[in-house]
Length: 264
Length: 154
Image (tube, rainbow over all chains, first blue to last red; front, top):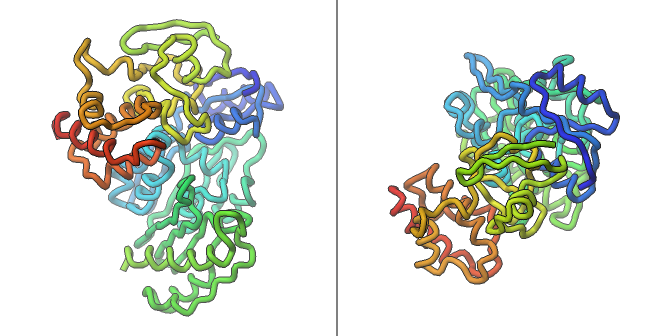
């Protein structure tokens, strides 16, 4: 790792002031991606501004939504009684990220800001129409995810919390890569008052996306059999050493069926 | 920068470079070499320690991030000459071959058991996702953890 400086401001405003001191500074959330990439010199920074002190880790729930602070760790979402009772699919998703030691550090805000194309959280955010709240504005899920490792966040913008509307039902199933445990394909299905949303992570060349083919089939009839005849095109899916596009297309259907089986 | 950490019950203060990894600090500054660095890409779990009561991978954390924290390493879990039940169980069940991954296995699985005292074999195997062993095939590791879970009060 190149030499750098470290600071841990005690508020979001102080963190913004701190990061503006250098054009090469980066925010540090849980660090489960950033520190290993800095070590490998795949990225660099002359200063890390740790958001741990900025009071951003909390979970609250109302009758219609769950609000999760950006520095809330995966382990805390997975074990939160509020999340377990009102949106258990999200607790299960958080409890399946990485391993238990990674979940003790990694955060929802860090995961979303990184927008790894194989990360789990983006699928829940997109399927549930969550809103990303930052120190500057509110961003819809649809606008937030721009492409692989790319988001709508401005240079010094900080995610402060994520608001998840509570659906009627939801389920998330992933097919982990046997080595890395990242999702080769992960499918999040949400049944909401205004219809069914299906978001797919791990498969798309540009990261997470909504799968309209499966959504249409489920909106006409919400059962496992209704997606039997759905054709998923391998176009635009990752065609890589670990899985071809057509294999991933098949996994999307298979994971969707498994998710539906949990919901019906 | 100045940091202050309580490690195995002892407070240490040190002046370090901000890019020092916690695993490096533990091994090279404090000479506690029981914490191993295996893959250095935060996948193998040989560097597992307890940070404020949670099992974490010390090669993926800066020492600076641990300023003010309480840390326990493999050197800090025995009670004098009496091994921790998890260490004793690894010893009795031959839960190791070369031993390189063992400190991480022990530190990680102590927390798996503390957080889930009646842990099942399936949960142990799933829980060990973040700890890689290239010798044993895991069989005796799982056996060790099951025995320790019983002794730890499960």
